[in-house]
Image 1 (cartoon, rainbow, N blue to C red):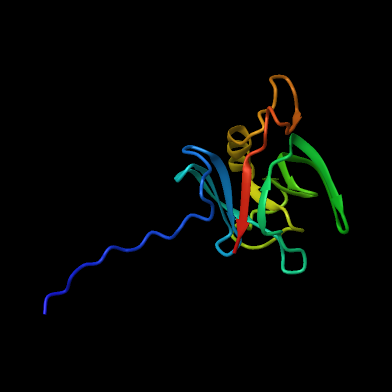
Image 2: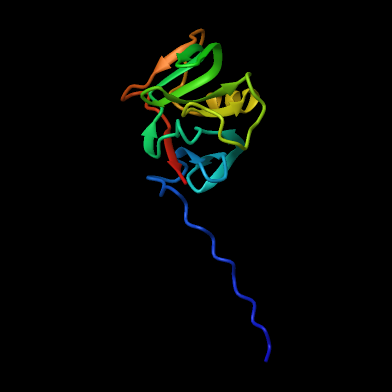
Length: 153
């Protein structure tokens, strides 16, 4: 008998874009990777560090609601000034740059999505809402909505 090659199925997207070119960010907690999408086309792909087992990253669909070029983050056991390129998507959970470790690909955080700072900058500049010229932060509005963030295992 002759072997017949079969096509490798493409795994389904974690999100079905609402329209062609829709910007959205996928956070894969299993692979510790972040992908920025425009519709079904990947734009950026980065390694990340998400929440530790005792402080897991939330799963679900959220929108970036507040972006800051740098901010202070504090909590039980940590005090981190000037956290760069911070994009809050749910309560105190954010995607952001990281200067205090270089152990990307492993869960390391209190629930946030840690990125290498240069990668966080690229994502920050690409994602909505747009920070107005000369400003250091922006809050999402109906006229300047936040990019969708989809977090899954």
